[in-house]
Length: 212
Image (tube, rainbow, N blue to C red; front, side):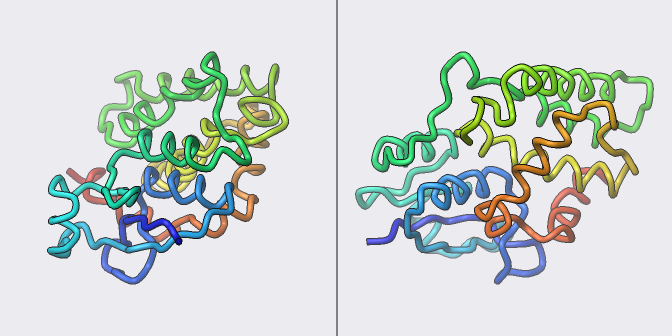
């Protein structure tokens, strides 16, 4: 029986996959493990009644497991790992937080209206830390094989690249070569190509936050 998963639909296009990096992380995990699943696209500005009854908080992604709807991508990916251990995707605990500062510093820099607030430097520091790690341990965070931490980072790096390119004409510096190779590697995976939101939906998703 296929698992059921609810993910965000695109802004203004309810039949297209939306721009939620946490939803994509769950889909990537299912794809990498070759688990059959049924996907429900949820229009987050007009949530269906059955979805709110199943999941009163109304957040995506949620996964149906043993007749219960489970929210939170951290919890969901953990459950998938436990129920479907093959191929293993767990990351060793000492590498589990690699790159964890990238997403919050990206959001801060994206929303920043003050070029001297240090948010760009904060993002560069976070990316450089990832670059140093990949240089020593790559091509993935845990060496040769992709693992959970990569599947969490991939959608966030995708958003970073599109949103900063569009709203700030900003790109990852050339000297962060290991990060650039890593992004190329992640974005070329079949699982990623299959589960990514179209570029215009990523831009549409961030626009209200940038213009707030």
